[in-house]
Image 1 (spheres, one colour):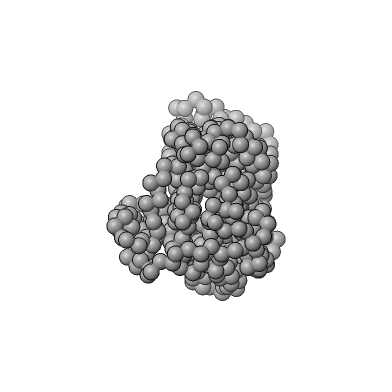
Image 2: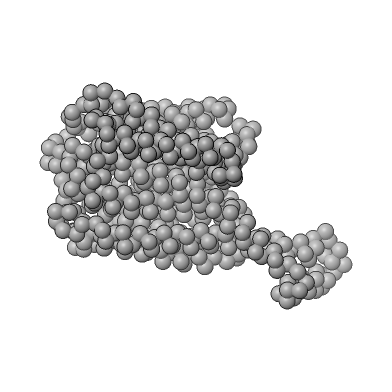
Length: 517
């Protein structure tokens, strides 16, 4: 019997598998669209900047709903709300695939994000209701497949579908999965009766929507709008600050808030949320950076760029049982600390990029980055909810998932912006060496002239000048250095997270050790 006091209506592991499949479908949609954006822009006769609103709209709606999913679960009933989210997410996926204009696609993506936002928190809440504390570590290992493997597989699957069929099928594939999970949840999951809120907290909802919505738009569009040099970004930044600070103040003041942020007084939940922000930002950022490097710098197809991430997904699946076993004999905080150490060292290894890097090396880099994640997600999720009162499961899972998804989307936006910025900085630095006074430049110029002359008059008189060839090399090297900087920042971020893990409680009461996990 679960801690919530409800006996599962079916095999609890089958319940975990079904609800995780629904969350997997939703998480997959956060990254599967990335590699299809150029194709979407071409089909809709839109610019690349306009096409990115299909990502922004989804993330904005998703982030807002995540925080209020606990309230909606109590109001409608957790099982009923979960079924509504699955059904409408599938319907919106169908409408996205059938869209005939960019405006239609953005509108349906907004709706898709709204209903998708309720899937992950409810999935975790159902697992908390279904499993006793001593089994949650293994149950959340299944959840890790959805949260970690889905964003990794997204670009691979999206690239393959886009190259071989049509970008519309990246939405259509949700329909059979949605139908399967809908009937599975309806048959297997037993609803938990909770005290329903009296009325909706309109002020809290409005402030959350304002703060998170404006924050997401600001970080997603900041690079294109030149950040705070743009009035558009300054306005949205101000609105984000007002909304977030106002929401915190109101939610602490209101008697029946739309989400109870007082659950963050629980030390393990608060520390775990901070660590989840670190993990999610690194996970999503690195899942975007490597495919972007492969496509934009190395000239890979969308399929090959996505396949770079596949070995990492396989390694995660192999290491999750190892992490779960280790967690049973070692204080959980040390397992998590080891995971961040592995990520940091993997980013140091990835920092050794070269312009002639091959597919195998890129795949190994990604596998090394992904390996550490297996030691973080399931243990971190387990310890986060080890001492949470069952009646607070809805609010706790909503906030925990919100931190993860918002941090992930911000990680994607910031890493993309930093690649552009750091590449320009590296170009500017390298260009200072393009002078006859630089021995390296003079030597390389002489070598290229000699090589062209040796190929005959046709090569020597071609339109490709030695200076032009050197400039092309410089731009490629500058781009590689820019990506190396991103990996260095990710390594620093991972190493900073390591001492934070020691703040988790290690005793049985605190839930940070192997007794509670």
